[in-house]
Amino acid sequence: MKKLFVFLFVTVLLLCIADKSSVFAIDRGLKPGITLEEFKAYWEQVGTTPEGTVKCLIIAALETVKEGNKDGKKMWGMVLHKDSVAGNGEPDNSQRLAIDQFSKQVKGTNFKGAIAASYLGGTPENGYTCSYENDLVVDERQTIRDEEVVKLFIQSGGKDMATPIRLMKNKYGYWKIVEYSSVYTGVKPIDNKDF
Image 1: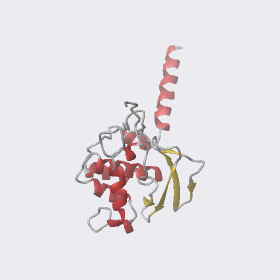
Image 2 (image 1 turned 90 degrees about the horizontal axis):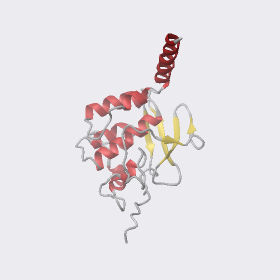
Image 3 (image 1 turned 60 degrees about the horizontal axis):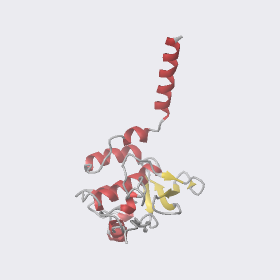
């Protein structure tokens, strides 16, 4: 009887592990300060899903504005539609507002990047602390999916409403971000109630 229980337990455990998405396993160990090569490898694995591409955008924004990664903008350029990328692989001048907005410091924080952090677990209550291992929260009720175009609505920990972001699939099967201006709008400040 004991052997049967152990066999069933191990089987259920393996099935639970196998049921997890491939992004879950890939995300383990992903943390700030990643190299361009690590990011590219991650992007090549998750960029075939709209959610993976959006997560890569958020990580690229954090690497650029919070971590000061010299390759952050190249990471950012990987996930954008080719019409928004300069010859050096970085976002072109049309993306300057996005970079500036993501760079704003939210009241009550001591770092830049809280807007991006709010999509990976950051909230006013936790000081916009985030983890690259966290998943995006997608509001499927509002999301519109087609084979070639998707409009995801992602939830921020610093906003009341889900935020739209539009992507298109390229001929190689990767999703590229076409429109994301609502993603980098402000988030709630941290209320320290110290007055």
